[in-house]
Length: 153
Image 1 (tube, rainbow, N blue to C red):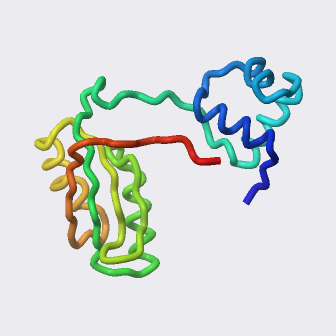
Image 2 (cartoon, rainbow, N blue to C red):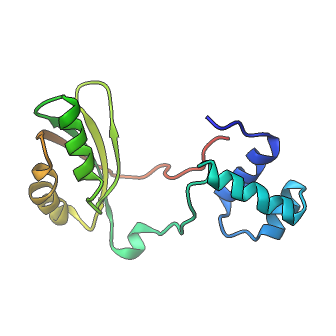
């Protein structure tokens, strides 16, 4: 784990709330000279604390109205089975997140699709075809109460 000092934490917090902020404005907000800010940003990126910059898109504005969570159970729980599933699921664009979990199933998948018809096709043609998938349980989201919040740094 990378140790972050008070200023690093302020930088990361500011960027989580506004990734388009200028270097000069960020430097002013955290009380650094712009050159020092540039050096710190480069270091935070190099250390892997900052993993990238991207725009957040309203999924409804681009026709992806259905969010679904899916429990996935594999037919075998061996290192090879986990590796094959993980490698394959990383290539599926509809899958936003995939987490290996402890408990009554192996993975929790978060996917975004246009509607239930597209989800049915995705389930039958993609998800159930991934290596080792034995069973799934789907949970369509009725309402997103909180999503993509900043990390509590």
